[in-house]
Structure formats: structure tokens, C-alpha cells
Image 1 (cartoon, rainbow over the protein chains, first blue to last red):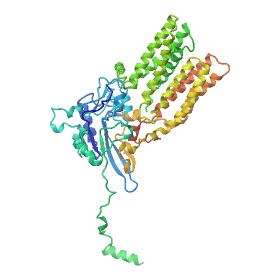
Image 2 (image 1 turned 90 degrees about the vertical axis):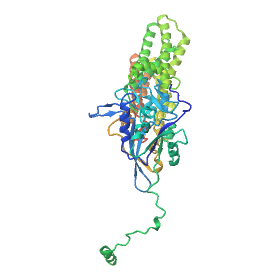
Image 3 (image 1 turned 120 degrees about the vertical axis):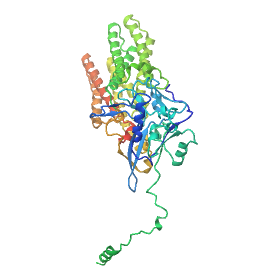
Image 4 (image 1 turned 135 degrees about the vertical axis):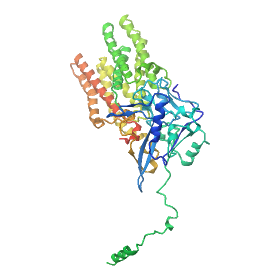
Length: 246
Length: 293
């Protein structure tokens, strides 16, 4: 049923640290790999070695440059996947009931055997989190690796989404954002985690940690540090004094 | 948004068809027998044909019946119900009128109301999407209804009502384009809010996530030929409104003129609908370096 649940027992989601992500795209590849080989239709590529390749991905990394009013520009890498919104517009538009939000953990999923491939859910999502599979013609989206996180056949350390498990920088965190005492909620609290496009009214569960202030802040002791090379010595010092006298 | 031929044909043809069926339902013109049969056949061909075109848009049309299940939340599901129920009611009305010569007036009125409801529900599929600011407004529904009424009046051969509705539609469309151009900027979504980095300075896409196209860029970050939008708007209004009104105002008005007016209107509305999709900016474009115009 595509009516959204009033509340969910848990709010499983991701916390992504924009200060830590190095933009290696390992999460993109890990996601594509796991979700091609496991639950649901494989994430297909069409014309993969041809002139016009196109493929379905559930997670992509965008890179943004931010230019402050003063100082040098900074570069941030932003992995983006389904935000498992509390008020998910993609779910309510689905005409068949294929899209749904789970009451037990808040994960937004697609029942692929009910999907007619109309694409309306992808239109409704402001984040571009859903992509039509070019071969199976059903809508694909992040499942939060629902076939890993509860999978007792996997070692316990692997029971988290493939993107989180693979991230070499530790920029991705997985947990229950509905529990204020969980590690992810504490992290969001401490770092001032934000929603993407809050004005779209989707109430995303996933949070993004903004970069910590840096470069702009000057150390309080800086004024007391004498410049070490203010006066050149030796030949350069003589040249400096000689030129000064001319 | 990608202007898919299937949805342009669907919204245009079914809009005109339901418009004609609404006029026939209330007995304008008051036709009977073979003339009625021809009028209803045109109405059903347009409305039903348009719906068939919409199924071409589906990845799995064989599962289309499942689309009747979620009418509580989904405008697309409501569209399925409204169109089938309306075609059913109008079908019974038409059969009684054509085959038995009996005009069941209340059924006709119910059918006409169903036609209006169906066009409104179709428009809400688009108007309900907050992610496409240009569509997310009551004027989207108003214009879908206005074009349906224009096409219906033309097809029903109602000279003066057609002139009146066409003029109102043309003015409405002009105002809606003007208002729509400002709506993206007013929705508040910027690349700053999309990345959560806006408080740090000016945000610019440095590197897209993929070098080629993706489903997202093809479907929702459509920009081809938008540079001709202004010319196309003029051509669309000329064909959809100005030329038909001119033909209707000719002193010697006959069937050939009416036919040309209908075809011109059809071509104009197809152009309007192409623009409706091609000009609509999806906020996901912010992640691909597209800014509000």
C-alpha cells in the first residue's frame, strides 16, 4: 500500500560526512556490485562498451566547488543515494503499490514484480534517487542493503550497507536515526547534520555532515609567532640593503 | 523533463476526446442516430486512443491493471479509475442514444461530469509534483481543463462557445507561461540547499558523477531546443488559438473551415504540451549544474 506509515518503529539511514569523503567512488562500485549480484533485478548497463553507454546505479558521487567570499575555493565530494524520507513523495505517487515504506525500519523499497515502469516515482523524487533499469524496465533504488543488514549468514561486521562497509575514509555511517542515543544520532547532533533540500518537505532520514570550519580560522597564537624569514641574511641580505640605498 | 511522444499524445488526444464527450453528454449538439454515432466514435477514439498511447510509456504494460489499486494516494491510479468509469458511463449513454434512440439525460450529465473529473485528475498527476516547480500550481489543472473545453467545443461544432473558450484559454496560457517562468526561483530550492553547502559560499558543480548520460539526465535534465522556447510559444498560441478563432469568425463558416480549425488547434496543443514537458525544470537538475532560469 502506497500510503505512508504514520510513524516507523526505527528510522534506519545513512549519515554522510562531507568533510571526510575523498571522492574515490568506492561506495558507487561496492553498491553496484552487491546490488547486481543479490536481491532484485541486476543493475544493468546498456551499450556498456559502445558509443552511448548508460546504466542503473543506486548511489552516485557528485563533486562541488564552494567559493567563499574571501579565501580559496574548497572542493567537496557528495555521495547521493535514496534518503529514505519520512514523507517520501515517491511512495504516494505509485499507482500499483510497488513502492512502499516499511513500518518496522522505515526503509523505502520497490516490489519489482508489481512495478509497471511508469517512472512517476522518479519524477516525484527531488533528489534523483531512483533510476529505471535499462534492461528490466523496473524502478531501482537504494534498499539500504536490506539483504545484508539482517543477513545472519554474513559475519556481523558485514551486516551494514555495502557502501558503508567499503568506504576507506569512514565517511559513511549507518544506524537508527530515530533513536536519539544511537551513534549516528549522536554524530548528527555533534556535527550539526543537515537535510538536503528541506524546503521540498520530504523529511529525509539520511543526514549530511557539513565540513568543519578550516583555513578561515586563524590560530589564536598566530599573532605571537614571529615571522622567521622577514629579514634576509647573507648575500640576499647585502643585496637587499644595497638596493635599498640606491 | 523529457517530452515523451507517448505522454504528449496521451494528454492532447484524451483531453480533446473527453472534451467532446462532455459536450455530447449534456446534449450539445443534440445529435441522434448516425450523426450521434459518428460524434461518439470520434470522442471515444480520441479519449481511448490517448489512453492507449499512455500505456506505451510503461516499462511493463502487461501489469497495467495493478495501477487500479492505489487510488487512495496516487493521482495516476485515480486517473485509471476516472477514465475507465467515465468511458463506461458515456458508453452506456451513447449506446442507448444511438441503438435505441433513448436519451437518458441524467446519465449524460453524469458522463460529462466524469469527463471533467478525468481531465482534472490527469492534470493532477503533474500538478502534484513539488519537484517540478513549474507544474506545481493550480494553473496546470485550469489549463488542462481549458484546452479540453476548447478542443471539445471545436469538435462539437459550437462556433461561439468555441471562440469564447479559445480566447480565455489563450490569455490563460500566456499568463501561465509568465507566472511559470518565475516559479522555480520562488520554490526556494538552490544548489546551496541541495548540497547543504550554501552557507559556505557560492556552490558550483565541479565534476558530475558520470561522464555520459544517465536515466536521470535523459528523463529529468532535458535541455534540448529550450532556446527556441519563446518562438515555439508564439507558434503554439498561433496554431492553437489565433488561427482557429480567425476561422470561426469568418462570415462564411462551413465544415471545411471547422476541420482546418480543429487540425490547427490539435497541432497547437501538441506544441503546447511539448513545451509543457520540455520547459519544466526538475530540481534534480541542481545536482547536475542546472540553475533556475
